[in-house]
Length: 379
Image (cartoon, rainbow, N blue to C red; front, side, top):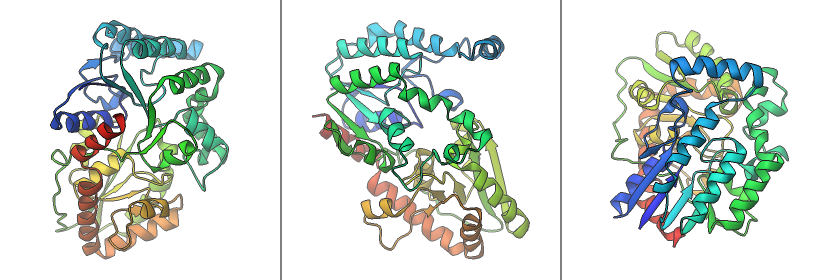
């Protein structure tokens, strides 16, 4: 089959493409690289002019005057230029309800072209969209990435402003159009299952695909200090619960100054991010999830101990009773310090959990197996 994957968050579509190719299919990706992460694509709608060093100066000036990001227009134009190459695919999958990341009116126009000129179109519930946002604002879960917003943390507010665009009238038209025309919607992890549970187009959960050959397991060796890594994306730091990790690390640095090395990065491209965390034993991912984020899964594949979403829903879904595969992170500094302290004082547990994590990824997230699951749903 000829398959088109539109949009990219956290390398999901790139890994899925690799799995689909292994299964003998012809796959094309188009995306904007997901900002500074700079993920690869076959066709790019990256806003290269407005995001260049000189262009960004003009972009920032326009934004301060009008509160409008001109890079959105450029992404839409670059996608439009590729339209003739995005026709007659057997399967098209959208990474979410705004995969092109342009203005809402332009997004609607371009998506209608994709639907018109292709066969079956499917949607991933991945990241924020109308369904997940509507679910979160009603506070239907014990906690969510909206917690800092509900707690009225003033400096966090700016990170949530764009999310409410998924609830405005223009996006609701996009949402209604997509759901009227897609063949089905798939949840990419457990956090998106409940918002879709009663939707007639919901096809179920397919775990994130991880290319285990590109993220090979390496047994954790602790000869001297324990290396702890925190990679910060400044655009979603509150949604990830980064302030809790930062405060916990301050305490750990003082408490175990002779036993730990702590590395913190901010807004670096994906390839550089991977290189920098490769030497770590422990990686801090997120506190508000019920399932793992994509970076967490790749780190687990390599045998790292990851602080991430691993709550009771996750344990029940995967029937994990004995072998701990990740540390369930919670928005509680004392709890995080306690968990980190235990690992630092019992380094053999780091090796055990790292091995369990790698085995779990190979069993449940292997990209070739996951690609077959997508093919089954698409059929």
